[in-house]
Length: 128
Image 1 (cartoon, rainbow, N blue to C red):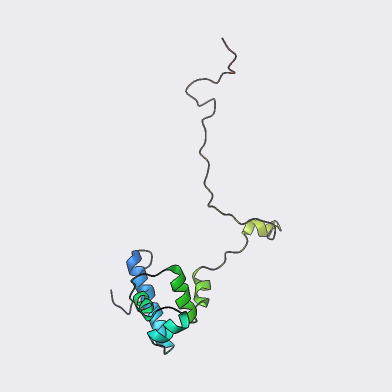
Image 2: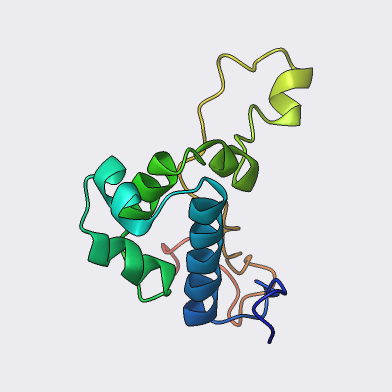
C-alpha cells in the first residue's frame, strides 16, 4: 500500500487504521507549518507522544482529541460522526422534544412456545 493512497477502513485492521490516522495527523501538522515540539506544547503532551501517535503506535482517545484540538481539527469530528438528531417517527408525531434517547440497541425478544405448539398440551393444574 502506497503512503499516498488512503486505506479502506472497512477491511483494514486496527493497526493499519491507527497508522493511517497518524499519517493524517502528521499531514495536518505539516500543512499548518508546525513541528512536533510546537504541537506538543499546544496540546500539553510530550513531543514523544506526538511522534508515537503520528507513527500509529497507539495513544488514548483523550490524547487523540487533544492533538486534534491542537491542530485545529475538531470540526472534522463532527463530519466523522454527526449527531443523528431525533428519529423520523418522533418528528412525524411531533414528539421530537419529548422522546427519550435510546441507551441500548434494540434486541428482539425470543418468542416463547405457545400452548398450541408445546410438546404437551396445556393444563390448568387442578386436574387429577
